[in-house]
Length: 527
Image (tube, rainbow, N blue to C red; front, side, top):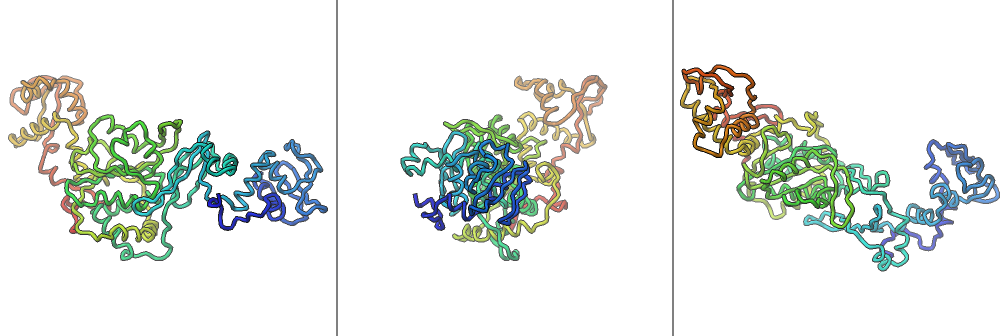
């Protein structure tokens, strides 16, 4: 049991005498709003209800109380010690609660008491070191009889300390609060202390070199992404995906870097974990890493997209009652499938895709160097100028758009879209004199899919409207099918050459962090 006590604990002190002789009555009077406390020993203390606490001249440390109709347990003119006032006013007359309060808060014992009660369940806080030496605390459910068996009568005091109404999660890496409105905060203290002195680029050269490799021409967005994750962990951010079919590109290393940086508030899961009914493994985490991702089921894709923008989550854990908490998870994925790790619609604004090249040879102590630079890097992040938020996820769709994202969006189209796109592009290539042409559903079916029974006119219409984003024609009009001379009448869809110029697509300009156009091949760095 001694292992729970602080070194400065005084085993021979009596909690009641300790409180009566050493502490000031303001400890509990402060709980009464707008109360006035005069520290002079001869002064009367008055709370907001007109109750007065007058030091008794005959008894050192005792008070006479007058005007207390709102406290049924207190009689006018009766003499109370400081501890008795604490018991009556702060703890509604409960002696055991007042006693353990003095022991726990003022006598400074049982600092390392590892058990908590949340609702009707008991948990033990178990600290564990991760692969990088960062201490991460886990909560494991315990039985009260096991606690008493292990710690004797000390276990009886558990109900008087560390008891909370429910769980919550309140992320704050700078001003951490373990308890919020008597809800136990499932967010963990940030494991690093920022450097206080001046920081130069040379001081964090390994970190900056690694981030330059990961974010390339979008390095300004990358550092802002990490700055917001550190300073504003409640802020929603886009889902970052690092892709490459090559090895040793730094995809997994970036997840390891986040694990070092955010400690117990980071978790690495599999794609199946994200779509499992039991979500406790990630529900309370602020940073969620998913390595080697391939997601092809539609319901799984929708679940992940929903997580990116969710503000709450219902925590589901085996054997424990479900409870709802705020959700602040940021998801970072890696995949060796560069173009088809999952389906991303062309309207999506929740994804940021980066393609990585081989990072090159690294020292065996590379991660030790990254870890040693973390306090300096945190100071560097805090000194970066704050950017203007351009969407609910900070970054605009134009800022996140690049060749990799466009490729994934194109690959995510249906097979019919790809076939139609190829047929239409080929028609423009063979007819250089036309800039647009109009066709009906019947024209498309008869020319390109006449013998394909799997493709109906309704399916063609669905793809034209949902994937080509064409408006459904409402009126009949005269037109020349495929730009031919013969005119006919029908409900038509019109295609423009500019939308199907493959050369233009291959040479598309992308917007860098400073809004200047860049060439696609500038994404790669010479490492």
